[in-house]
Structure formats: structure tokens, C-alpha cells
Amino acid sequence: MERKLMEMLDKIEVPAETSKKAEELLMRELVQKQPSDQADKKDETVKEEIRMNTQLINKKRNLLKIMEGTAAALVVTAGLAAGALALRGGSDQSSQTNQAATITETPQPSITNVTDRTFYKLKEGKNYIDLDLDGEKEEIVLKNSSTGTSMVDFEITLGDQTIKGSVDREEGLKLRAAALTKEADSVQLLFTNQYFSDDYLTDVYNYENKKLVKVGTFRDEVDNIKVNDDGSFKINQPGGILGTWKETTVQMVENNHSDSKITGNYCLEETTLFDEKIKFEYTVKTIKDVKLYKSMDRNGGYATQLKVGDKAKTLNVIDGKWLYLQAESGETGYLEVDLENFVIDGKAVIGWEVFAGLPYAG
Image 1: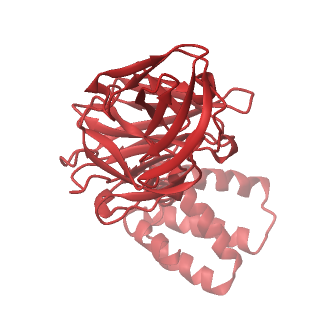
Image 2: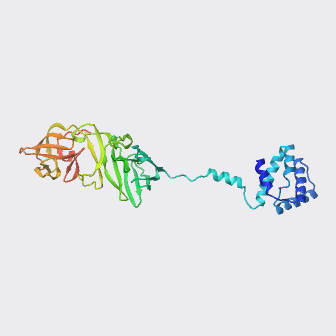
Image 3: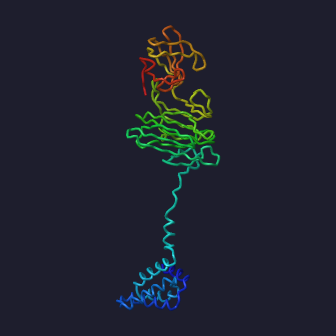
């Protein structure tokens, strides 16, 4: 503090007469004399002269001598230094500098090195991440809103696009980023929007033409996933109506457009979902009109149709994706399976709304 005071005093010119009067005032205050009325007037005159002349350089030697003689001089010196600064028409610059050093702008969450196959957490509010790896980061905003129930509404905003939904998780939606393509040439966003009874559903989105485009959905919680070097990952999911829990490998691949709802450049491909062929023999009764395909292909044409009330026999489940049936007439055909649902006319229908007598596991 002494050094700073000396530096400030060196920059101020004070008349010798004023300096002498100021010294007399200081000495009286240090020895705690009670000034007379006349002395008070002189003191006021001295103070006014100090204010008028932006003071104190020539007082340096005398002040320091006084400071060496008594600790009380430190208090007086500090008071005069503050007064001198005030008389110069400004506030305490050193104090302002210290304060400015402690107030820093909070950096916006920015994610880098996303291609290392790690899942990165996006925070509530603004996030910045280079989704297409073109050198410029996109702004992604996550907002969770309480509904007063067990559900939390969420919004994911990128530019003029907003993805809205609800999640049955008290803390709101988890939003993650990872590079899932084999070449790690782009970054995807993932979030789990269903947690009910650990029956998870996680959606994957890719950034294409300045928009987030859905790649697909897998049946596990996003934070359970560990990405392999080739971008694939394993999940554990229920087999739904036609099987039990099974380990599955998921890979993001070029879209084959087998699912009309997935319109972008990529889709999710699942392998080892079930054994290649499972014996599955049950007698069922149809609750809904069902058309059976000739082969395990939507474009292969229909083999026969089961009407409401018809009975049929299930024979096999193939790759966990097709149910092979035989009608009472003896005709056979395939019905597409989507985990716990059947796909009828391109739409998923819950299994127990299609057949009675079919076991449910999941």
C-alpha cells in the first residue's frame, strides 16, 4: 500500500506552503490535541486549500516519517489518499480494477472434440457444438418446464426449428451428443424421452441441411451407452410380445428407406436382436383384420388375409422382425413385428389389439 501511495503522490504537485499547513494538521490529529475554534478555522482553510490544489506530492517525506513514528499514521495516510483521489474527480481506481478482475463473463457451454466417440452432456440453456464439423458451431438451446405432474415438458431449439415433447423424468430431459457414423464425420444428438418402468426409448437426430432429422429410436437409456470405435454400440432391450431381453448391436448406417418415417441420410440398423429363427407355436384369434405378406418384405405382395374372429397358428419368429403364421385354410404368410407392436399398413399396432392368445414378454 505504501508503494502505491508513493506512486500516486509522485504524480501530484502541492505548493510548499500548503504542504506545511497539511503537516501541521496531521501532527495535531496524531497527538490527539483538541483544536481551538481558531485552529478549527485554520484547519478548514487548510483542507480547502488541499482540495483546491489537488495535493500531496511534497508531503511524501514528512508523511512517511510520521508513519514510521506511529501506527496511527497509517489510518490518516489512507484517509488522505482516498480524499486526494476523490478530489481528482474519480473513484478509487485500484478498487475498481480489482472488482473488474473478479467479474468475468460466464462462457457459454461449448463442446469440442466430439468425434472421440464419447457422449457429451448438453446443459440447460444455450450450448454450442459443431454438428456437421464445418468449423462453425451451432447453437442448441435446451429448455425443461415443469407441468406440476410426473411429466416434464422439453424443447430443443436449433435456429428456427424446435423439437417439443414430454419426458417422465423429474429432472427433465437429458440431451447428449456423440459421433455415431462409422467415419465419425458428423455429430448426432440423442435423448431418452421414456423412462417408464425402465422401458426406455431414446431418439437419435442428425444435422442435415441446417435441420435436425430423426435417424431412429433404440430401446435403452442414453447414459447406459458406450460407443465403439466404429460408432456402433450395444444395448439391452426387451423382446416385446415375441421374446425376452436381448443384447443388441446398433449401428448408424446409410438410410435404406425401409421405414417411411425416417427420411434423412441415415437410419439405425440393429443386429443380433434375436436368434435367427425361434420356434413359436401358439393358436391365436384375430381381433383386427390382418394381411400376411408372401415374404419378409413389405413390397413382396400379400399371401392371404385374416379377418376378425379367424384363428391361426404362429410358427416361427425370424430375426425378431417377422412372425410366420398359418391360417386355418392352410395358407401361410408373414406379419412384420416392431418390438412389442405389429406393423399393419405401415402403422405400429399394439400386439394385444391384433391377436388374442399371444404371449407378452417385455
